[in-house]
Length: 96
Image (tube, rainbow, N blue to C red):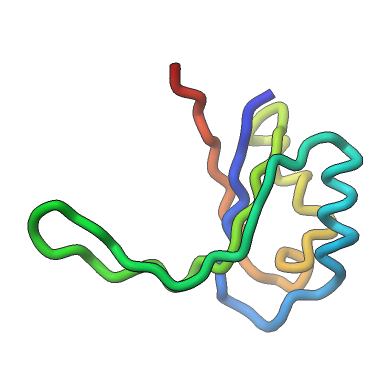
């Protein structure tokens, strides 16, 4: 299994459903690896000017899935996804 990050975008109305129920379901399936809301931030760069912070990201969840094709199945019941908001799915490659 590989690890994936589900990035919640702020591009629609409020979430629908229960985060507690959704997260509990991921935990019961043994695929939940953590997550959090994303607050304010800044870009840091050693030299030159940094670009603007990505304000459209509001939270993330890390999950285990068999493949990138399988990872979207982890969105069933996700209040953000169920409300029609965008969820970006990215693989978190392991580095040795």
